[in-house]
Length: 135
DNA sequence: GCCAACGTTGGC
DNA sequence: GCCAACGTTGGC
Image (tube, rainbow, N blue to C red):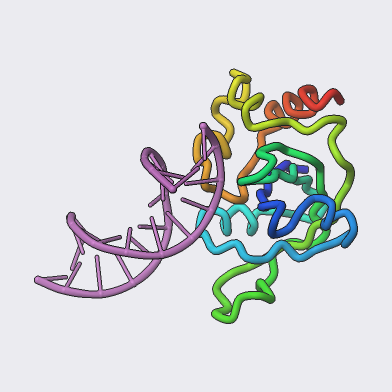
């Protein structure tokens, strides 16, 4: 089981909306590096859910329920999406500021490449983030 | 195939 | 609102 990090602007699609929906197709990724990460996702993998632009914190944990398939919002047929469901909110949100201050997270993909909307999280990083969340 | 111009993302 | 990072487009 691998762990990933997916970003969403809460104004566009918030954690609360995600919880209300119970399951969603993660559409709209139009970046090749992010697409490669989507393609590597397997059912059962988990994803930290991060609020970009507003909030700037990881708020919850999700699970991949279906691997990559054509993105239903894409008319070109070039892009793909996975389906995810919420697992649980974190004990407390982990802010970008706190992550940047944590030396163990200095090499995190999302820190090094801030614009990448779907990124991998290592086991060490995952454990660190969960600890920061008070879990 | 290079590179300047431009658009978008996302943090500050 | 600004700007850095980065991706894409289009002229040459």
